Length: 376
Image (cartoon, rainbow, N blue to C red; front, side, top):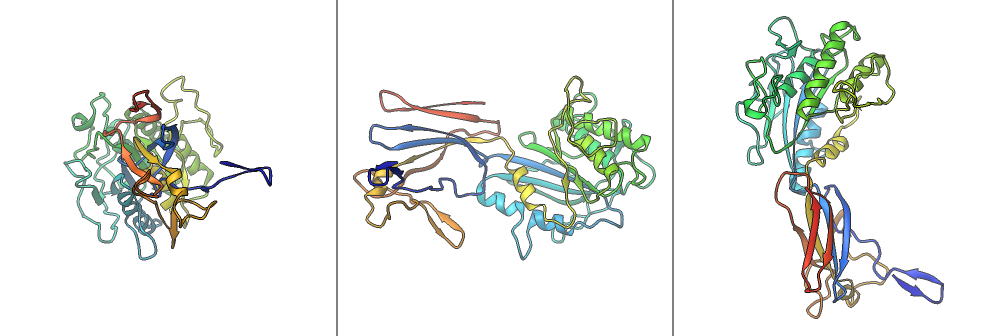
C-alpha cells in the first residue's frame, strides 16, 4: 500500500492477486519479509492430500445413479470431481456400491463385480461401480431377504470394513461378511449412503429396526473415524431425521433440526458429517468440498512485488495475475535485478506425507534462512 496525499487514501499499486489458481483449499496463510523486500508466503493446502469415497446406493426402482455418476466421472457439460481433483494435484479414490448385490451401472465404469480384495491407491484410484453382496445388522451378516434399501446396514458394513467390532483396523479388520471394502489407510475416509426411504428395508421409517441400524452405523463409523455424508433424495422428515442421527448423533426424536452432540458417550458424539439434499441438483460442489477435506500439506511461495512494479507492462492498481476465459495464470519468473516477474519461487511443497499438516508459520532468521513451523 502507498499513501495518496491528494485523496488522503491508501492506494494499492498491485491489486488483489490470486496466488493459488488451482481449485484446492488453501488456508491459514502466514508471511515474512526478506531484506530484499521479497515476500515469503506459507499456507496449508489440500494439494497432495488423499480422500477415499465409498457410496452406498439404494437400488430400488425409485432411484437412479445417473447424476451421481456424472458428478464423479464427468459428462459432456461438466468435468467430474475425479478430473478436477487430478488437475489440482489431490487424489480422490472412489467406489460406488449398489445394495442387494446390484451394480449401479455407472456407464463406462461398471464392473459387475463385488468389492475388491486390494485397496485403491493413487496409481490405481478407481473402484468403479460394484455390487454390495451382504450388509451388517445387529452385528451379523444379513444373508436373507432383499436389501435394496438397507442403507443403514450398508453404512455399517462400510465402516466395519475399516475397523471391526473387535477393534482390528485396515487389512486386519474382519467383519462378519464374505466380501469387505478394503480402505486405503492413508486416505481420509467418507461414506455416502443415498436413499429416499428408511434405513432398514425402506418405508415405513422410524421403526425399531431403523433406530437400531442407525445407532449401529453411527457407532461403527465414529469408532472407525469414517465421516458419513447421507445423500437425501426425499423431503420426508422421518427419513432425514435418520440421516441426521447418522451424520451427527442420534437425538431420540424425529427432528430435522441441527443436532447438539454432547460427546458424553460414543453414541452422543458427532461423526462429523452432514446431510446433503440431492433432489435433482448436481452434487459436484459438495463433492469438491469433501475432496478438499483430506490431510493438508504445507506450501510456500516467494513474491517480488517491486520487480513487478518495474514491469513496463504492469498497470498500477491492477492485479499481478492474468485472466483469460476463466483461466488464471500466475506471473512466474526472475525478479530482483534479473527480471520483472511477481512470483520468483512458485508453489513449493514443504511436507510430504498424508498426515494433517496445519497452521504453518514462517520466520526469517538472522542468517537469511527461512524457518517453518507447523502442527502435524
